[in-house]
Image (cartoon, rainbow, N blue to C red):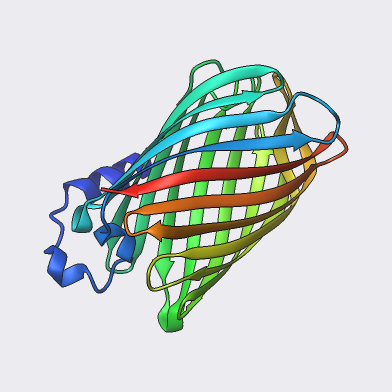
Length: 258
């Protein structure tokens, strides 16, 4: 309830003039809107049916009024399929950004039936920042709570971040995971990044079966612009889901600036 009140107050507040705040908010709020569509695939080492998904995303920057992103996805896992839709709204203030997100799944045999999250990204001197986040996901068979605390450093075209993630299933026994990120962002908005995460996290390991398991995940990703308004999104990852399976996967997408 307190989170909903805080979001409502921010949305009703009169934003400062865009030109006056552009220097203090992230450039994403002043970028052009875009559409993106793509495909992901995971190949499981257990010879179980492979995973895949098709997604479409729209991003609408509103300058001082915020940033709205909407995404729909058609997901196949465990020889089942599901469709999900989600939205994220971010609002900039002089000392940081507050973000509210939510999603809903149509046939939730392995995805969250619904999820809602709130995150605060605060700024600190000398290019440092911090994040505080909380998310709740409701599945057919369980409810998970995920809380995060992170710190980041921006140095020119580079960004480095560490996040600690505490999670629980049905409010039983908190588990800890870690995420480390490094990213290069060029002046032309091309990007290269690497993410490594490890620890104990809640995972749906089979249809309607969730466990807190030891995970390791490594991802390489990038955004490139072969044409002025057409970008290519690509990623490759390797994940280890406890003793259940390992998976090698990737993403390929096209981003069009409107």
